[in-house]
Image (tube, rainbow, N blue to C red; front, side, top):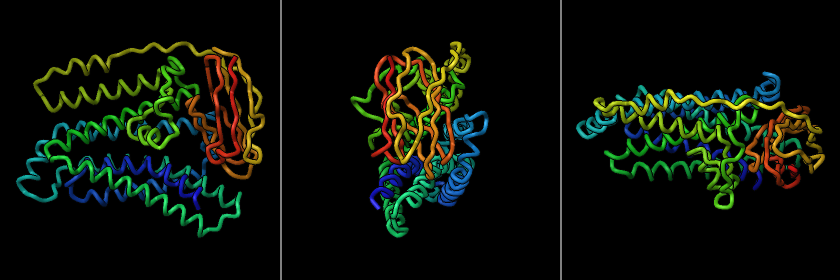
Length: 377
């Protein structure tokens, strides 16, 4: 029960934080509850489908289907969030005035509700697929009763919902004339975080250059795998060891949204800064050919071998095979990589160039046993 509670809370928390911001951003908008509930329902259905076809999806596009799909839905969410921000920049004053004058729920904001409902669906689908696969693995690989599993899952969902509600209540306590500006800022950070995550995922599939594997390491202050670290990852795209392309995507998205929203809300302002950001040309460094390494195998929920040595300052690809009868996830906060491996599947993880040192990795669904280290010399 405790294991299912922790995993469900951990994944649902990230989606719940996004739901809390969306609820606050649509405060007072007519029928927003139906739209957001519809987004959650669509996300649950999507998560079940993604979990059911995870192996097929991952094997598509020469083994990079999982990354391309995840990055695509993140980019779609960025577009929807951007639409909401720019729309609100133009209509926020009218909405505030109508709320004050009429004193009831307004209908003006319904035009952006569909966009935010789509973002909720993406968040629930992304996190829900991992929950489905993890809980299925517990059922198959242990003697946990269905009642205990369900109890832990419900408790985890309840805690995540409570956290989402607390965030929502904290935001709506802000005076009305400031609420839309603050929620617009939070949504801009959310969009920037998703853009950065999409760039990092595509770099992890060797589809984008890295422009530096690790710009900095702030894990000594706040590690990615802590509760606060995961919350900030969901809200603003926090990463303790971001790559260059991840940071550029985050910063460029944030700058474009902030400058564009200001230009729209102030029609007389000259949006030269927006044009400057949009015309930025970033030259991609040529990709070195990835070197092959021995296959890393999930066996009995452990890694074989547990230690792999690789040369420093060289790109390489690591093959990860799952011989167990349940899914697991290759993950490393030090390498900024996370990829699902279904039973019988072999995935490719693109890495490097890396500085000398030791980089730990683990199986996210069996962290107590599946541990390993990549030694870079």
